[in-house]
Image 1: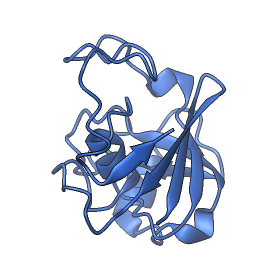
Image 2: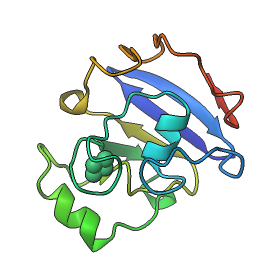
Image 3: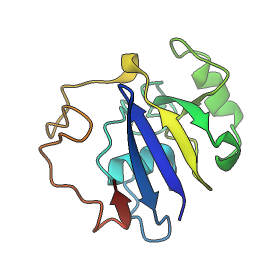
Image 4: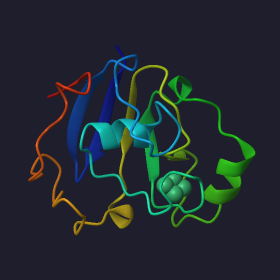
Length: 138
Ligand code: FES
């Protein structure tokens, strides 16, 4: 199972993800960082619903970039409009996970006032669906 690590405010949230049994969240491409984040209650923004039409799902890949799907022209064009793009930036809704990856959710893409009360990483008021969703949260 791929190990997906999201880093928010310097805090790492490591998820063991069984991609085969993870339910599709219908946010971004199936198996994308956004899809996984949604299914496992990681607060990754997605104003356009994962259709590559905004940049709110911007993440910075710290390790395992080779374990993500190749960037397509649509993603590259959209990413060009993101704030503070780095050579390691990806759009979470378009980057499909194929192996271990560590990504950081930049501070400026976070919205701490979300529906459902996902205020801070690990402090969501929503039930943690990880076990039911085929993932394990540590
Ligand atoms: S959620 Fe809008 S581009 Fe990814």
